[in-house]
Image 1: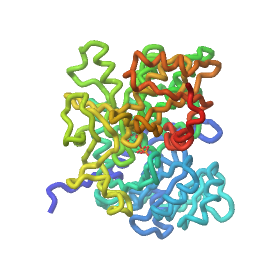
Image 2 (image 1 turned 180 degrees about the vertical axis):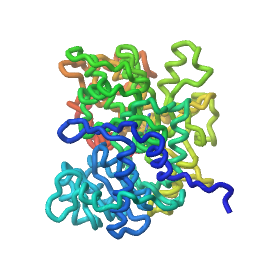
Image 3 (image 1 turned 90 degrees about the vertical axis):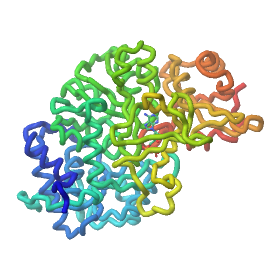
Length: 535
Ligand code: ADP
């Protein structure tokens, strides 16, 4: 018999929110831009009712409930309803290519789809290739499909979850496929509970009940999908921005709801920085105590711009689909009084892993020392780090070491204090004449230039050096510079042999479905294509 009885599960998180924070608000932006105000008390009741309605559809334990939704209160309800009913929520990124959406819905065996009315055209394109038995529409449901509110109303308002196995799957998520075909990960209840606890600790998010939390990255993204649980566990107010992720709409919410904690990918913060720099409209952002940036390297110029010009403490975080959030670059005790420059260098790093996560870096000659400079591939393990990919434990096995550590594909240096600094992704790294060139470092140097809005660097084949970096640059509106000017600008900032011979100018850098630079597309476009080489 177990010495303690209670399992670490999502039902316990919901119970906590309903019992201790029933009046704490959740604000959700609707399709017509209006703000809908509800509470944990109300949402908890609705999530339980929806859970019973899903079970009445005749689903077996473990059945998958997919979502194609923006960040709103109904999506939040499904995040609870399916797992507390012993089912599994599978949030899908609506911005993926429809072929990828059809592939992952089929791969996951999704039986139910909860879809925003606005995304019905996506459903129409994939319906013949997907296993959905029930389609539930948030908004007006066309004939033959279920309305979300009707389904919910058919449930039992007094229903309570039964006992759950903390090792059973609560969520499945897929990698965004930046470097290959999307791969699925099953996340057990226990992993979500432990991730919520660990990420909320004072040295990391330091989340409290008086926080007002607004995830900007959509809920299917590793940086965001832990938040509905973490915030509810702590009783923090949540602000769900719906489909309005443009800088002005976000700034309105930050100002109006007094948001204290928010998170997004760097492209979101670059947009916000431009909007704040443009003085035609002023916003009060003094409530923010941290804006988290993750998913790709946060350029130092952006971190400093937000911090120095607008007082927004941008906090660098690192995460992956395979492990949710992994590290946060807050300053450890021995850096609190360190010189400003040393503090800055640590804020630019990806941070220290949360408690219970263990890391190591494997270089060409075994494990790399923690000296801040020796590079190696980051390996990680912990209670919420995946041990296998869905449906392909054998196929994806090369992603794990023989002793079970997950190989992240990120090339890093680890400092004495345990700060991870990502030099590059293994697949993006440029190896020129046998030496590594860090593409994020080159990109940051280029983005320091006042005319440059975005810069991405990829490796292209080179006869003499095997590979050379090629930079693709998009300018700010009305600004410009020649490739030669850009080369001169970065020369003092990076090693001389890093400076790219080829700099291509584009209108905008292509992005992946989660807003990262799409280097696969850039490589396809510019590799081999030497005709356009800049002298
Ligand atoms: P995909 O691998 O398809 O992009 P993920 O969203 O899981 O899907 O991306 C995880 C990867 O994103 C990490 O392995 C890392 O390369 C990159 N990443 C995440 N956060 C950061 C960060 N703060 N700085 C640099 N890279 C990051």
